[in-house]
Amino acid sequence: MNENIKEKLLLQVEDYDADAADQHPSCRHGPTVLFYRKSETPNDGFYACSAYRNPKLCDFRMNRNQWKGNKWKRSTEKVFDFPKATSCFNDPDPTSHLVAHSQDDVHAQYFFDENALHFFADQCQALSIDKVICMGAPRLHFHLRRGLRIKSFLLDFDERFGKYLSPEEFCLYNMCNNHFFYDRQPFELFLQCQDNERVLIVTDPPFGCRTELIAHTLRSLMRLHNRINGLPVTPLPIFWVYPYYMANYIKQDMPELQVCDYKLNYTNHSRYTNVGASRRTYGSPVRVFTNVPLELLKLQPNEGYKYCDKCQRYTAVENVHCDRCNNCCSQNGQTYRHCEYCDMCVKPNYVHCSSCRRCCQREGHDCSLYQSKQHCWLCGQRGHIETNCSDWLQLKCKNRKSKRTIGCLICGQNHSERKCKLRSRYFQESQFMGQTLITIRKQEHKHG
Image (tube, rainbow, N blue to C red):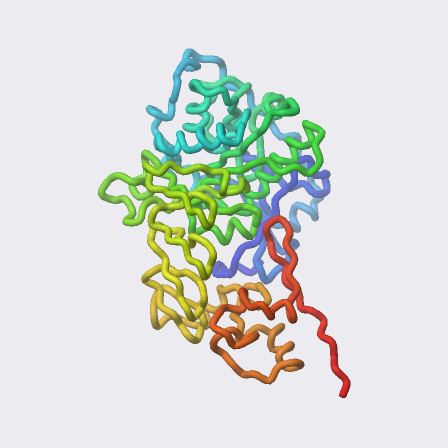
């Protein structure tokens, strides 16, 4: 395999209940993930641990051709026994005294502060949630089981919680591959619902985790819930805790998720908090991504939020509604400004680059590198900007004589191609699950 470490690694995850021919080999952390370079095929890839990238923590690695070539069959995976009952069951919140794991690249534990706990509890009550799956969110689990009439089940990679919880509300779990280390039956019983019961998934994965893995697990849990309850393809409400700057990755994997403006703080993180000398200038970058309509979420004004009548949702106080964008666009805690050239709201310190047709962090950047990471406003594909769009160059060659490079390439007005009223003449757009598919319209040829 070509070891080009600069090339992006793609991956494939094993589906639960996969046929033997489609199974992946397992390490001690459950089914492995198939990795392969972007320039290669899955057959050129290798299997590695889903949870750990560091070979000192898990050194499993197997080339794809070894697994298929030897036609090995994975042995039945061991189901671990649940820890014996202890006197710790009455502990209301062990996260208040347990020493948090601190390996940032694999298993760092950061616990929600009180405001975050109340935020989730308030949303559960507003949405009439009866059951919550806390995937990697132990402090929320212990908060919900104290006083609130909301049932909760904790899925977590930390086996210490087995000393404080029964099998009816905890399972040792790898969220990177949907692997249950203990008997899964208590969790399946938890998923059984009456007709009027509603289930919510809250997940707080490690920020270094590949979003494809978490998205796959979320979809797997939803399928399991639907199968147990005899439902058709029915989504569950999701709260995915992640930094706002990872939005593009999440949108690629679960385009139906939107980012809520709520700034989530941790009690044991020096940067992702609103207290302490090391806190970030504009507050925590951690947000909540959700498929729940944002207008249904209520944020507290006394915590720095306001209601926008035009957006019809709660937003941060520093967010100013932009009539051109028809949205409160700020995401990072600053007040964005609208750039007349690229026709979108940007961070206040960004400068416009006429070559890239976009605003960026600094002047003198590498335009070719920057453009290779952009999404074209004409065809929607990643890797080029509008002036280099092969689809548009083909259309322009057939139908247009204009050589304009500034303003809208379609009509020449002072707006982006995304907002041009004439774009429907050349491009057809369709929406599915929050994702936009753009195709070229067939052009009618005029005969003179």
